[in-house]
Image (tube, rainbow, N blue to C red; front, side):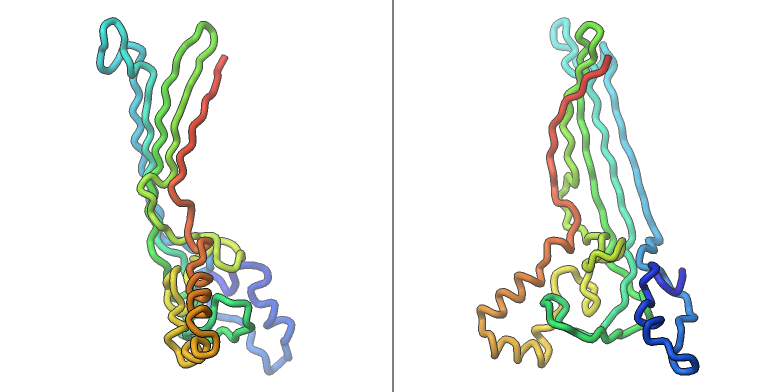
Length: 212
């Protein structure tokens, strides 16, 4: 809790400060990076040198292992606002519709899996692995912040959603469509669906390592 999430949170207040007129922030609220709940669980299983199913005189899974990491976290806070054009470079006035950081973004869930197998070659231990990040390819909201200002929920303040501002449904939005037509509407929707609003999609990595 605090009155500002970073050193520049109220720079505009200080810049425009006039004694007896300007009100300095005095009420604390959740900071941008305040994540109330975070859960992690790890499952790790390893086969010994003569362990697992046997094929003739060999153990195919000897030295192999699998690691599964599950992570979940509650959403980061944001300040709800009235619907505005949050996607283009047009200068807008932020019009809050609630107390600072009184709203929360959605929870995030992710499963990572890593499997490897070790093989002893004389004095050298060789290991090959496959690593899958975001195994379920879940579309989690990014925690980097849409404006690059640090950890916060990357959702549009007018909707709490990472995919739409619903600005096109306002009177200004309808005027925008009338002015620029269907092509303008499609370009706006494309810009609105910003991939930076989402965290890493599924990635599969392969690698090897050597130990002496």
